[in-house]
Length: 244
Image (cartoon, rainbow, N blue to C red; front, side, top):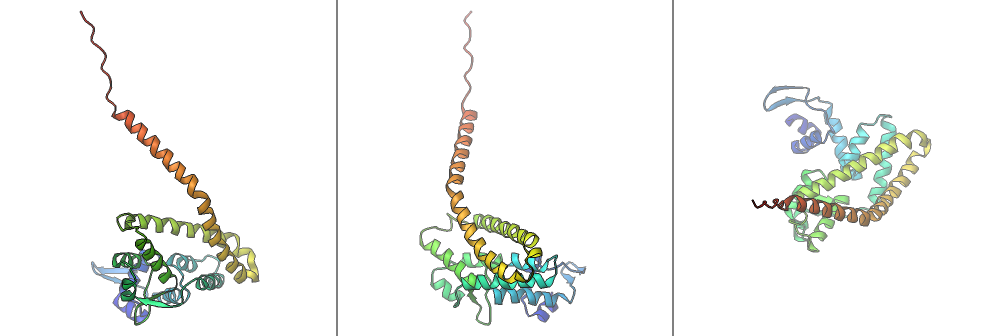
């Protein structure tokens, strides 16, 4: 791992995170409890992952889909670059260090948690957060300032939220790769850019449409659960004794 980190220029902790997320294959062999040997060719793959993160602000879930592409590298790279163009248009251009973010109200615990999940990654010698990373941190900071405290929105709930969104992204990209990419031909770059913009609007609109009906369903389920619990908790009446 130390050699792999040195050859790729990526910290060992980041490489281990890539391994946990399934972006890299595991060791080819182990020679001890704390010693594992990896394919030397992984150094190039690690640099490619880091480059997609740094230059195109692609989340790891998208990068994983690109690297696992079944149709060939060319189409997936075209798709990745087209997605990156759209995402970069909506991302802040400036960067902020950890110290600057803490001054602006971002909680250190939130920053550490997002970084551990690979949702935000500092770049460069100054370890600055930029692009969608910065937008995500600012959004969470705004939520805290609005009064949504950590005990109201603990990391356990946020993990479920991130997992649900990751599943949505996987479904979306799988559908695109199976249905659009085989038929797009030379228009793949243009169609990918259009689909990326449209899908973001579509998700927002569908979510808005589902909010109230889902809330009503949750309320009904809670009421039904409460009624059932009340029935089980009521003491049963004993039959009256007959007088002799």
